[in-house]
Length: 191
Image (tube, rainbow, N blue to C red):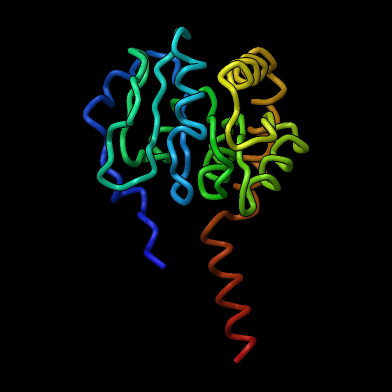
């Protein structure tokens, strides 16, 4: 298994300054099942006429382009520096990968989740049950379903409020440093 990139290793894309002063919606297919027609294409189609910049991650290192026409309001990059991006984002449309979902929630970003394999349906269900986003209940949603879900999350402040509550709970719990401490304590006790 490969090593995950740290935020410092993900460079800012050349279009980063275009996000300044704009409403931003991030979209990611994740890094495991990376067929861009599953979620990226329907999401970009759904948001093509929205007054936002759509920041899309292909999830494949070295692949900054998509194999279909990209609307004028969308920008793509292989990877996006989520810790720098999410403070600027209105919401995340994601396949429910745990890393992106947890990072979004740690920044108080609400979600629209469309995942169909591995743990993603469970993650989508938990995001919806927590009130922090909408579960699309499929990994290949229609553009209309994405558009409706994004509209619902943007119109209803309770999703952002709940995501911010979860962010506060995550911060209070100590985040990754505390998790590492607990793992080290567990490993030391197992010896």
